[in-house]
Length: 451
Image (cartoon, rainbow, N blue to C red; front, top):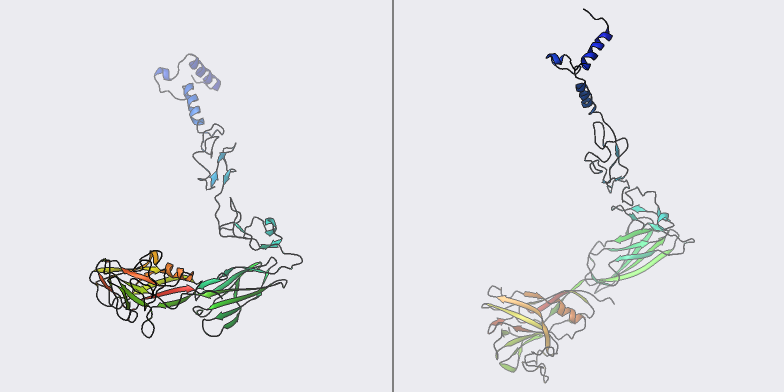
C-alpha cells in the first residue's frame, strides 16, 4: 500500500511518538529524527558557538566581553599604561590608555612638555615674556633662555656673565680660552662683539691685541669665545675688555683680568751663592756646622742627634695661590738600611752662620735646645717626610709634598725655613749640602697676585 500524502506520513509519525514507539523500539538504529530530545540537544550544541556579547565570556569574534579582557592590557596593545576596558559592543575601549612618550620624535605626548619642534603651540608669551624664541631641550622640557622682555623704548645695555676665566682668577692655565655669555632682552648684535686683550709678562712690555671672538648663538643669548694661538706667558697678567651692542645700539664695555700660573724654585743657596743651611749637633751643642759639607744626620740616639736647618730664597710671594709644592733632598753616600727625614716648619728665626743646638742666633737661644719646642721653635705637625734606603741612587732627589707649608708662607707665616730630623735611632743619613749636585730645594706652582 502506498501513501502518497505527506499528511498521512506525519500522522503516523505522530502516532508513533504518542505510543512511545518508533523505529528504534523495534531494534533499529536511533537517529536525530527518531529522538526529539536528541534533536534539542543537537540544536543546543550548535548554538553554543554563537557569540553572545554581554555574557562576560569572550567568544569567537569578540575582543572582550564585560570584565573578560582575554588577558589583554594597555601595554599588550602597545598603548603604554592605563586601564583597558571593554565597550558595549565587545571591542576594546582604549580611552584610558596613555601611550608611552618617546622624547626626540618631534611629537609632544604624555608628560612631555615639548618634543623637538613640537612646542604644543607655546611661545615666549605663554611663559611670561613679551617675545623671543622658545625652544625645547633634548630632555623634552622648555628652554626659555631665548625669551625676553624687550623694553620700549629700549635703553638697557647688554650684560655679560659666566666669564672664563672668572674675574680676578689667580693662576689660569697658559692655554685657557677666554669667553663670556652675553644677554640682551631685545637681542645682541653679534657683528658688534669684540675683545681687546692686554698681556703683561713678568718681564718686558705689555702686548695689546684687538680680536674678534667667535660668537655662538643668536637672539638674546650668545657666547663670545677667543682662543689665543700661543700659550700665555707664565706668570703674566691678562686683562680683557669686552664690548658689544644690542640691536638698538645700546653698548656694553666690560673689563676683567686674571693671572697665568707660574712656577718657582726656592733654593738653599749653594754654588755661587750664600748657603742658607747648617747642621746642629746635640753632642757639640755650642758648635755651628756650616753647609760646606754633607751633614751626617744621626737619628734618634739621645745625646748624639744631629739635625738640619734649611732656609730658602727667594721669599714666597705674599697672597699667591699655591697649587703645588714639593720638598726634595738627595743623599751623597750610601745609606745602610732605611731612614726617614721628617721636617717641621720653623716658628723662630735663626742664622745659618750662628745657630747651634743651644742657640738660634748669637745670643738668642732656642726655647728648647735643638729647636725642639712646639710651637715656640717649630710646628707640632710634620710638614714633609722623605724616605731613603739602600737602593736610593746617589745625588738624585727624593721628594714629598709640602703644599700646606708653602701656602702658610704665602698667607703670611714667618718665612724662617724648616728643621729636619732623622727618625731612625743611630742611623747616619748623609743628606747632600746646598753645594752638591742634589741640594735641598722646594719647587712650587702658584697663581700670581694681581696688582
